[in-house]
Length: 117
Image (cartoon, rainbow, N blue to C red; front, side):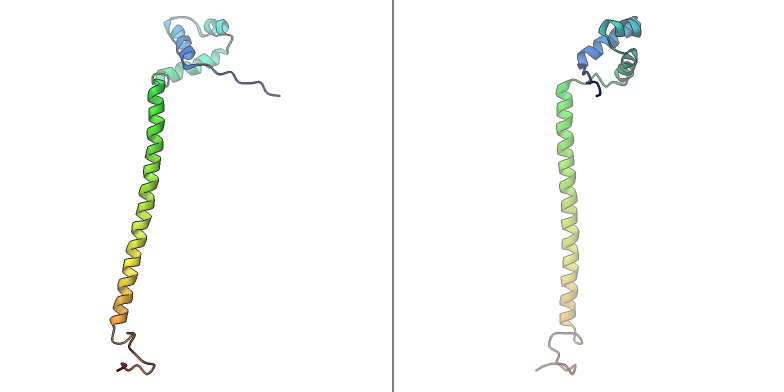
């Protein structure tokens, strides 16, 4: 079977990356912690990109705002479709009313095409 993946806290990742940036080698830091040096390289790249700089409260707030945004976008889509359908219905009813008022195709015609009295 496969091995279970270890999870490392953000604080530990930052601490190890800062050790490497302060002058320690990746190999030294990796041997101290018992992890692969390539993992520290990846964390260093992520650290430089700013992945570890946000605090968890901001991350939670960001996720919450993203969910709210998605919900609002879905609502806008639904309202847009409803608006479109109502406009089409209005056009249909206006056409129908116009046809009913017509001398030729109106509802007051008998089968011979004459107006009923």
